[in-house]
Length: 315
Image (tube, rainbow, N blue to C red; front, side, top):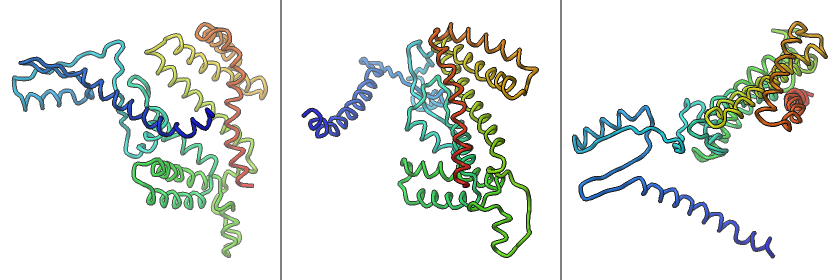
């Protein structure tokens, strides 16, 4: 009975809750205005770069009747967030807003998504002619969808991602699944070979190494951004994030030296960094955090799916 009741009433109640939350936010605005018989007091937020403009505009309109002062942000104040990115990164900013808008004192990841999503897509997709085809499909979706909507912005992301996929397809020497030499031979140009590509089937181990390095860089960037975001909130957690970064870097060199006999000169420094990072992690997040260290290795290894899915597509 509860399930049937919920199924019937939930959409309506959810819409009411959203409408009331908007009204509650609007009601808060009224508390920022006060007046007496001879005085109006208004408090609000403005972009720091536009304060001087606002001050001069108010003085231009009201002269000496108005006094404008810039107040410091209080310790418990949470300013509204306005993201500002280049126009080309707008769909990735939309993606950030769609998931969760960053706080005023946090790093805006829109530019990072603008770089990382097309890069990962290109490493997986990596076919020049399929990239052109997908760009055209995305462009058609972009034209048919409502401007500014979810589908419209996803189409833009797809279009942007198809561009590096085209160039990665040239590197991989993949054109609708053929090498350029094979494709040219189908059109009567036998024996024409313009270059030697990085063929994923014959260079799979190298591709695995590349994707692992991409994974290490991607996760390391996440730890670094996490430390920056936490620095103003909780220094202990921020330092713990840096310790995770230290464990990741030192772990890479320890595995390389111990299992693959590479970077052997860095084995002892890496071991020292690993030990210091583990101690810092225990202090920052408690002994239970040590249990999570093996999961870091599995997170890095999960980036091998980039190589596996891409190569599977080739096959």
